[in-house]
Length: 329
Image 1 (cartoon, rainbow, N blue to C red):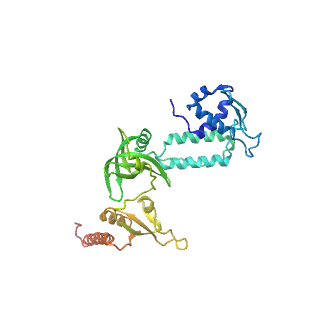
Image 2: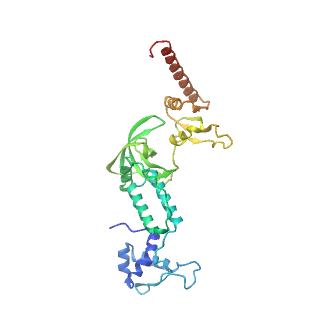
Image 3: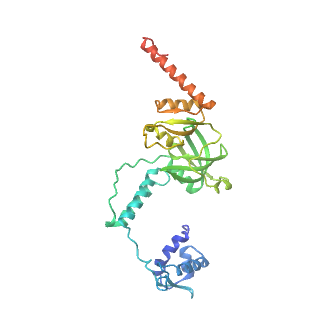
């Protein structure tokens, strides 16, 4: 049997349901709707005081059910299907497009079917929505993650952690999937670290659904988590980032300390970045060609700058050896 719908969904469907089955016995209706007779009576009592704005005698839904049978006397217009306006259709289509671009939280095929249904329902009232045909291929691990969450199964992951520049393998108990700023995240309990962790879909290299049930601690599941999260035990560096490299903030989950200055579009922005390895942070800063610099002055930040200077000095020495006719070592 399919799961019973939520009460709100059930209430929306009840008037046309009973209108098409005038005089149906309450016990039969309760069985078809997947609820108890007591719940059905409560729902009908709720419907009896619903209707059009004003809530006067002729505006409320009128359903008779006192004798054990249900008859609709007045629908207050809820039996008439609504047609989306062009604006409403476009809002839905744009929202669906954003979900499609989020890559992971929902199946792309399901979203495209929803788009087709909205367009068909809107009909001639639908305004033109530009589709540039740039849908990206779904990440290979996304389907497995969704399956594990829906089936409440554990997951085996191979995950890339940028702050450590490393691939790790771990078993996790999925809690939920969330989308933040167009990025899909898996909220899960990590058995290896014995803690709650957040995994970006696009950094999961492989995901395998395991036969065992997902069993995160109940006290952890009950507490919502802000996304993305950061490990407080790791060091933090303050960075000055050129506006041309501000994408670093989003990609490496840094925290902006100040927004770009509209009066000076060339001024760097300040951000804090959590990292695990000074060598990794030094390589990151070097790879960005001077567009990012470490400006914090704690011992670890000074170590990072020393690594950058030593690497730059070694590179210059190699270039000098080549220029003098030698060979790089």
